[in-house]
Image (spheres, rainbow, N blue to C red):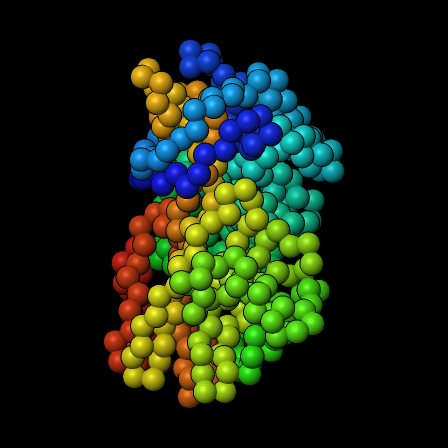
Length: 391
């Protein structure tokens, strides 16, 4: 699987946000490699290696190769070790504090986020756990860790009473790293996509201020804007200009770091906007990429929102002195921004009904289905899915 490097970050302050400690190439990493055991709902697993087997597309790297000190890796490993011990002892506040220390050493590290999320989950902080797991998904390509995160997201969905979402998460976990626990919870569900045909979740508004307010009411957000121009500026702030025709970004509060992505259509009355978020965009240094595609068929409009979350890529030095994405077992000297696996959410709007009549979501960390409109039929095929539904 390829990863495209989007920019190179050097210097200690930014390098420390990489996903692993860096030192000389022949020096072993502080964290041990991840075990080969299947994913577990617990956080009692060994630390991940700070490497990636993915290859990078050509880029122009900086020549500054400031290494990350050993102390960073040691602080990270110590925080992870203490966090796991406190989790097993059911001292969850202490566990969360320890994982916080690990994340101070390596901000954005997927394993520390995942394990902090589990401590929050068992402590009853379900929404905080969901945020940690979602951010962790955007920061790793390691299949076993992804499987563990999807499993724990399934547990979150169960607690929130979202049985269908839970089964999809367990199915994704089992597809990435088969385990008895994930297979049992997934049951007969093998479709890697969440498919829903519950009408609603959309509202007709006359302008951008109306769009902002409608999303805020639906999501119980605290953020506000005072004018049409302010609303338009905020809603477009995380979207490239060429992609803004069918997707907007929304901040749940004034200090938001997790923004919601919402598809929408232009209508004679103004806009028809999906008030349910399609995905989350994190204001990490790597940001992310958002693309929107549209298909029209027999009075229906399908809006496909593709979001490639930003992630940290460890960067290594070759014998020739070149910089490239690290292979297995190699030690990074710095880190760069890249794009993680694409998360896709498809919303089908019915303009006559002024409603969203179907929704499909999936992640490209495994096989993905084909989703198309044929007349007024929605077809979802592949990746364990075989759905044909009249809309």
